[in-house]
Length: 336
Ligand code: AHG
Ligand code: MN
Ligand code: MN
Image: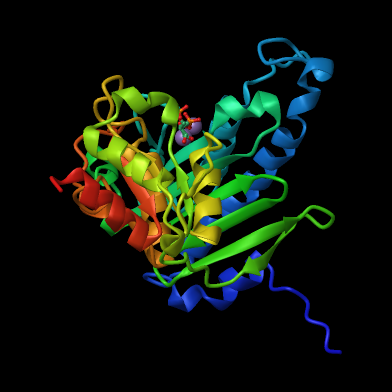
């Protein structure tokens, strides 16, 4: 029997370089930086349960350094790694109020900006439940050579040149797109290498999972309440009742739904008038992945990727997943 060695992420980036937008090699290098940072973050997340015996966030470790909370650690690791290379002129992060501009000669002439949710689902860390990282990459629109501007970060999601996520789960995976489909790589911890495990990922057009925080039910719009009841109603032909799955780590909830087929909803509610999820760090990158995998992502009315952002930390309602299911949910939002 012929034995195949899996393609590594490094090999994949080299082999596909000319297919990437602009094909200068810079985007491959940028993705390599994200790959490296994700391994460092993965190592720390794997040790999270040892925090009590090795020292808690806020306390000092043996070397006298302050222990950092993992979301701060992840934020610093990604930003430091991106800054150490020359492809990126600025970063915006969910963890920071404002964007960071890398203002030396090398970086200010770079073409790319990165937007990142360094640790998604951070409330799950303490209880050993999967978390993730989400990233989004754009070409700057301001002139290279000048400091990066807010407008470089406030581009609609349809201008993304690449986007992806990392799942720190029962195994660690990186999934990304450069606009030519979606590929997933699983980290082989014994050699510290990501290997292509999920080539050309496609989301089923229909599934039977619905993912929504039903604790907020009484605060949801009427259409969403009706859709939830629809999901719960028996209809053998349509495979209903659907099954409810909600981890509370957006990346992991969506990753599961991409593989199995399903819908993820974070709607508006009386307590969160624009929903909770952030357009730039969460919704846009995951919308690009979902569309590239053949699915649909909207705010209930319009395509997430067509929304023109007005501020960095803008929140939007989110309906994402299997195309037929998202269309079905949307039909409940308009008068039926
Ligand atoms: P983060 O940890 O980056 O702040 O994101 C948390 C988000 C998202 O991961 C998750 O789907 C959602 O918050 C869960 O919100 P609820 O607890 O309101 O369901
Ligand atoms: Mn998040
Ligand atoms: Mn976060």
